[in-house]
Length: 134
Image (cartoon, rainbow, N blue to C red; front, top):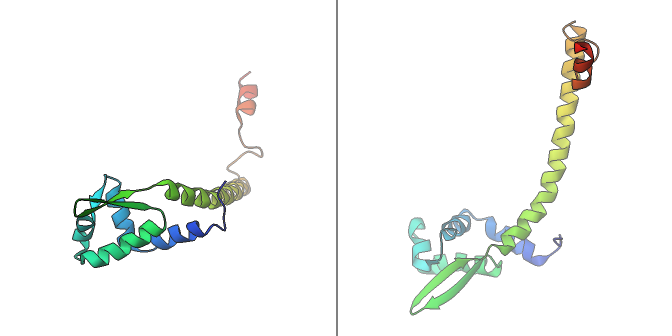
C-alpha cells in the first residue's frame, strides 16, 4: 500500500508539475539519453537541463551515471508506479460516483419514457423476456 503522506510522493508530483521535466521523462521511455540529448528539444543550456534532471533525480524518477565525459540519464519508473497507485484511489472514487450518476440518469430516462407512454412499467430483463417467449 502506498503511504499517502510520504515525502517522496510530494517530490514526484513536484517533478511532474513541470512540462519540460515531463517531456524529458517521456523521452527516457525509449532508453537512456545524455543530458545534451535531453536538452536539445528545449533549446536550453546544459546547466538548465541539469537543473531539471536534478529535480527528477531527487524525486527518484531518473538515475544519472557518467560514461567518460558524458552524463547519461535513465528512467526509474518505480516512483511513477507509486504515484499511479495514489491516483488509483481517486480513480476508483470517481468511477463509483460516475456509475451512480449513470444509474440516476437511466432511472430518469425510464421515468420520462414511462410518463410519455413509451415504456412498459417494468424494464425488460432477460428473465422477463424468456417468460414471455414460453
